[in-house]
Length: 303
Image (cartoon, rainbow, N blue to C red; front, side):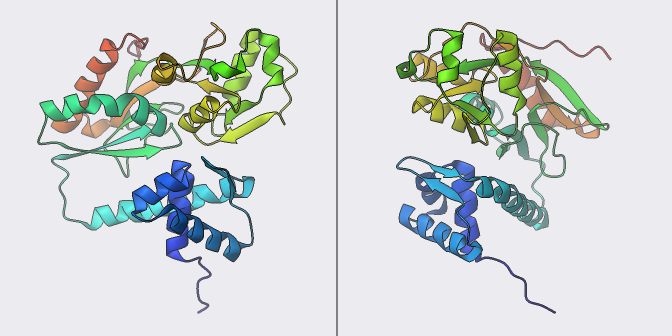
């Protein structure tokens, strides 16, 4: 039997962390090694594959097109290994709650509030399963989800939470005042949600935007960070830029916000809905949404 043609595990681990976090420095912190060690391992992987996976600058490691193609496969393989490893361990599911949540929502909204849930239910161990894809509930690996529901699958329970609105943001230094000035700047695309800019631009009546004048990233959080650095205009899908706007790092150049065709839901397996840990989190989450003045509560589906 032929030997598997696999890159070194250490190099793949460094690549996956750097691609997921968008930073060699942050990857080094997560892996407990130096930034130069991460860079060295990624370089070894690039040499092994004979391709360039990152465009490097002083602040961020940005995936090339080939890197964007390679990363989902590596990420999914690591996710499967992690999930099966967890499944082999002795069960502690009675007091563990694994939450599927999009990375931007986790960082900008859920994590700052989780202390309240942990204070109220100290016996429940919370695990976050963050993703760069925000739709389809992953029942194999999580208990509940806070997702942007595009497909409502049979056998699942979905409770509406809040509406999603599209609104562009940029650094104050760009000094954009008119819609026509958009054409002078780069649009920062989240390539897993390419329709966002099209929806907003059509609603705003803006035409003539060249596809080449864009920067593609894999999450809204990276799009916002790129916007903060003056790389162009980023699209937001909720109140997740509120803190950066408050601090003066971002501005909303136009008042127009456009309702997205998909909205945010709580999701779980329908048969597990009555489990105490799931019901507690659902009730807590609904109250958190209702208490946030930045969110427009989504009414219950009448079906």
